[in-house]
Length: 236
Ligand code: HEM
Ligand code: HEM
Image (cartoon, rainbow, N blue to C red):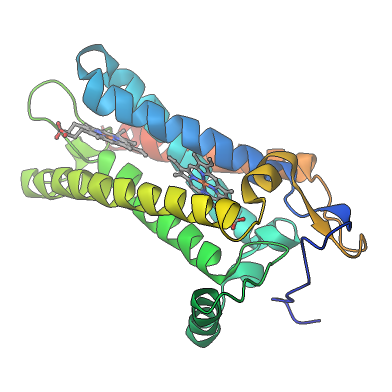
């Protein structure tokens, strides 16, 4: 079967089919909470918040490692193979969208798939650069001591630029969600909460995959802990 199979979803009166497993949904809403918390502690409540800023950042990093792995071993629509489309297909999808032909997908549509990649890349740059960043006075990331002063300055700049890009992506993301909900009539937010969409056949319900998700999360957390605590200890 075509991995990108497009189905006549959101059919009126169709039954509800689970398209997002539990880990993908929890990933999304925890990411939202942790990104907001990282922003607040990094910028708004800097004075007492920097230690927390770093903890929230490690948690974001863990989620990112998790999501990359989940893109390979997660359930059907969580996989990269399901939502990464060729440029030609993405372009054709965009053309259809502009002409008012609004195709619904079981998982991410081609633009949604692109936005997953963009978020992963920008957030990896954000959290990864934070590990080496420093304000030159009170705080520095756990790996800042392992590299040169110039590298720390560069990573601190990357940390600032990545944040501007992140804010831009979030704004685009929210506009896209409003468009799909309000204009295209696709209940994407509800699906990210309940996991289900209306469909014509229940044959391709995905499993909840809680056990598999916990296993992948444990490995991700172990990798990030080794990076932020193990590596500096090893070098000192
Ligand atoms: C998604 C995750 C993250 C977000 C959204 C984020 C965001 C921010 C923001 C908005 C600032 C203030 C920049 C400014 O001075 O205007 C900041 C500063 C900082 N962040 Fe993060 N950060 C994240 C992850 C991390 C991580 C994982 C670390 C390291 C463990 C880290 C370490 C730092 C440090 C050391 C500063 C101070 C740098 C400076 O004053 O220029 N951040 N971050
Ligand atoms: C800091 C803010 C946010 C970030 C970083 C973010 C990031 C993401 C990411 C990475 C995905 C892909 C999910 C995956 O497959 O793993 C996604 C999807 C989604 N997000 Fe967000 N999100 C944010 C805020 C929100 C908010 C506030 C809403 C709703 C009010 C929302 C609604 C959705 C929906 C509906 C999808 C699924 C889109 C689809 O069906 O293709 N997001 N988001």
